[in-house]
Length: 302
Image (cartoon, rainbow, N blue to C red; front, side, top):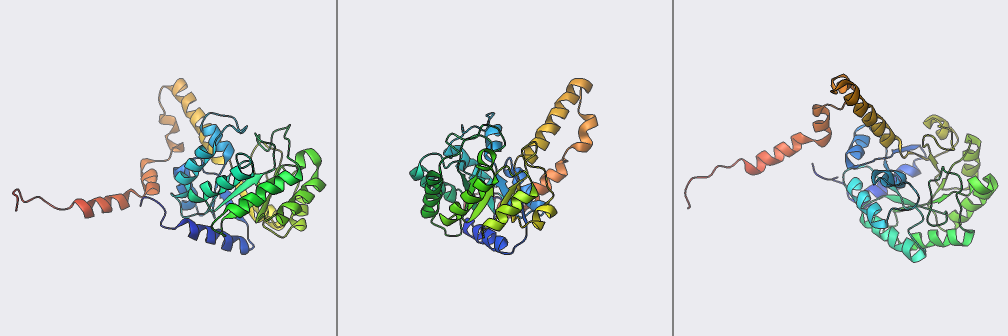
């Protein structure tokens, strides 16, 4: 009932344990707190909080327009609603190294289990768009050092994302990944890899967990989780997938109203009231109410 029964510290420790286990962790992207509950109910290992989804939810493109306050607020809403660890997209850290430090502590307070900081020029753009620019190595390393130094819980996962592959090639991505690990990154997110072989090359270059981004309509082929596991990937995200599915269904529903005048034909595709109530755990709230309000008044003071 209400929020997660696990503390943020417990979820961070669990993520560290899960990553040390060597298997592949699946983190679908939650577009709101309710979808995070669904991800947990379906048995996934974690929840991803996408910057692109947050921007889209606000009606904005993913070009660095969102603020730390907006990201932290949504991160708290999602993280407190699930027992699963959450990993959040912290973009470039929202400024210079001191801003990165504040970003880390603010997101730590929001209850996330991990975050990733990228090496794009600020303001950034979606990692699967053309025309990305990355900062020099020194600037990228300062961001990660600031993030690592700022965290108060040593189990908070500080992941470094590099977008250098798109402009400078795989060799540059390998060099950047190694440098980021040396700077203290707990994990590496190599964005927009083209092939499984490229993921495998990054895997061979560093000894920390590697994340694969399986976003639809992007630069990477949509590899299966077993294919990614076979080349040593430790964590896979599906950042915008649930939002895309939901918006696709919403568009079809609106078209059906226009064409048919009602949504009767779409009922089989909808989550039922009973399914929603189970996901919300209505029964627990009913038990709580009856336990608090099952008294009667005597009718007189006494």
